[in-house]
Image (cartoon, rainbow, N blue to C red; front, side, top):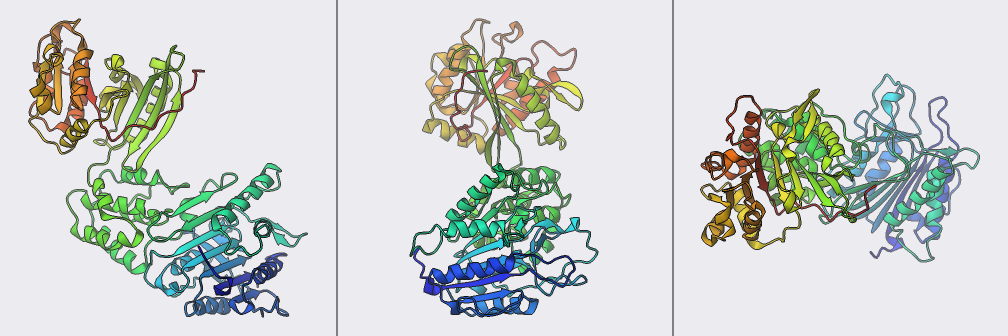
Length: 625
């Protein structure tokens, strides 16, 4: 990126005196002066710098200062909309809070007890990403102020709010914001040295730039500041946590990076970010969603999309609009639009909401095609990977969770086939998700082929205060380890996903082992029956896997199931493929009742359900503890 310092503009604000008793600071004005000195030393013309400080006196490096009162600050930012630059830098030092909507508020010098005049920084930053500021394509904002929560201050009056000129959102803006704190924290000010700790760190990093280097790299600046605060944290000097928000143009993802130690536990990604969507879009969206029937799985929809967001999100808000409001504060637009896509397809297609999504998703760099996968029912998948350890003395177990937003590892243990830690982890997860009936997760066990008959569906978990079999609570399926990916496998899985009926084939193990090529080629779902207890079922399983068959059902050895296809047919025939896991779960539940016949389809049933698109990354091997 080539930026000329002569084509750089800056707004520098330092407020250390207010119209409120006890609010005086020692440092923001000195920090603002030093920042102007640094800008000029790097070749930024004095005429391109606006300096607003308490007790303005003589010029600073040729820059004539003004007072940081409300009307003058607001006039300065309005003035910027009629000017242009290759890089706009904003620096602010002084008092700040996070309001009830977790937006950062920076107080003007004329703030008084009854009217705490302030700049709504999040709104300003949002305005700076619209066409009102199209003449400033690159922006760097540095904020040395507290972000303590306003409701902790005990103020009885609400905060006034200045709304800047707000144009239409543009995707070509590069905006980088570095905050002195994470939400909920105080910004440390060193009264003796007359400087904010954050401003000191920024100056130290910027002071190391080689002569002639321009502009400063925002990511490198953030990293340098983070390292200094980490060192000060290790020394016990501060637990302040700077935060960095970057909105990169041309369709790239927004991201937020928190550093040093944990922020206030109430802090969310919402509070470091800017509210998504402009006011007119929000008004139209609200009128649409408030007429939408509330889905039964609304809480799960919110939980699923919010889980992948950096930072802590608010708890489930309890209403559709509450969810939209919470997701507007995410660090990217993807979770909000994923939620809206699900909402639009819940209970039938909502044409008004779909039209709104079609209009606004591209404004946030979201391809409409990417939202198509969110039109199905919401269901998590827990995948338990069981692999022999390196020493061959036991098994390593890794628990993964997969949802529409991706997959992530939840647990790793070496407790082997006893699965004790896995049972405890699954118990906690199921207590959380099974509150909404009908949206049970699928639990997959990825096992070596010779362990596919291990009775994982009979694993006992605690749910509702009682011990229950896992297979009675949710669909439990198995998957083979190390299956080579093949075009035939992928093609047949697409048939399963499309719910194409009529291709299930109940076959004897001997027939499968004899490679009935026609049947294997046509079927995406196969049921295998044994003629004898000693029939080598795994030879048949390996045969159908080699043929690319992704869904295979059979029963563990039982005299009453030998050579008898009816239990297998009862589950498979005439059923849509995607309904098979649920049918197996229902049969297992029924089989748990007393007085069921010995050939009940739910007794000892094994379902291999192998999705080629959901395979966990290679795990890091380690010897068992």
